[in-house]
Picture (tube, rainbow, N blue to C red):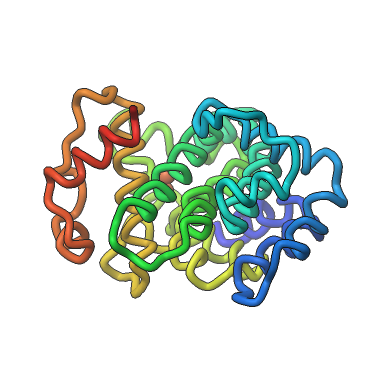
Length: 267
Ligand SMILES: [Fe+2]
Ligand SMILES: [Fe+2]
């Protein structure tokens, strides 16, 4: 199985130079607007797609955002960097074949919503984390599924059978069939890509947040759990009990706080 995962990893396209540069912007406390603008504006497609995301209904700015500099004044440099990454990664998350539909079905919407909710939580909570880093953590948390979506279809079918016949979650079925799971595979990809350490931690521990030392991983865990529930049941049926109580304790959140935050985010 180890070899099959290695082969799937090799099918992931080499990360473009612009994405490596964006990771450096996220890591570097001295990075400035000129650094970001140079990266995004040197690729016209990336610039257009980034502005398209800025002008989406989610942000609902009263005026059209027409330049990267304008976007930065509205939502901050690191969030614009996150949106530029979203513009690129959304293209990679297109589900193809049996493995693609298992691991990437709905992934484009799921990771964008998780990114936006994680960013929102950081802005609303009394924490010092960067909203842009929260956005990127949410965006990349399931990146291991991108690797697994390149696995042979027989393996996807085996994972699906465990889910259907035993009522297992995708995560548990991955562990049975692969001997590993998408967070661990994603972490290996994150190491290859040299993503900022905090983002790599989010990727590795978003399903086991109490093993993380980063507050941001706890926040992305909450965002991921809530987005899954919103997707499955709709906004009226959020069950905070699905979030590890230890996570809420660490974040100084009550169940009522979470419900209020989610309803404010949905409005
Ligand atoms: Fe996940
Ligand atoms: Fe997820």
